[in-house]
Structures are given as structure tokens and as C-alpha cells.
Length: 115
Image: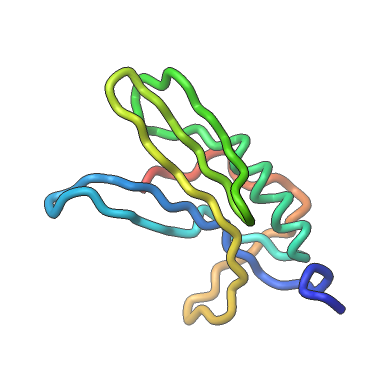
């Protein structure tokens, strides 16, 4: 059985560049978890990215989705600022506080909370 065929729990990871007291920095978190094969998890990530509605910028002018390697890049252009969101798929290997995973077949939540 290949990695694409074996079932696992997958994190739908979202990273974004955001500002703070120490200046801009990258933050990454799981936007959700799914269980299934790698192919099913990639399909779930794809649906999640297409449904993603960023909270920033407030006045969204344009949202462009790019596929890159195993993930996606979303550029959200506003009237005065542009935000970059990266989505990747990661297999959960160990988690001391295991998150419940939903089957990969139903679509994930429409939009994750902002970082």
C-alpha cells in the first residue's frame, strides 16, 4: 500500500504573514483536520482553499489562488494592503492533544478564523 492509499489524519495547514509588536512574522496553524488517504486529504485542502474567505484585507479587491507543489498560495489584495496565505497538507505523526478528524469526503469549514 502506497502513502497515497494508506489512511491517516491530515492537518490542513494555513500560514500567513501578519504584523505585531515585534514586526511582521509568519504564523502557521491547522485550519482543520481530516482523515482519509493523501488523495482525499488533498481534495479536501483544495475545496477548503477555494472556499477560503480571508478576513484581511477588510476591503478585498482581488483574491487569486495559485497551486504550488503540494499546496496553494492565496494572494488577497485590498485597497491599501496585500496579504499572502499559504495552505499545505501535513500528515499528523504525533499529537499529545489529538484533534478529532472528520472524514475527508465532506467539505471542510468554509473559512478558518484569522490568525
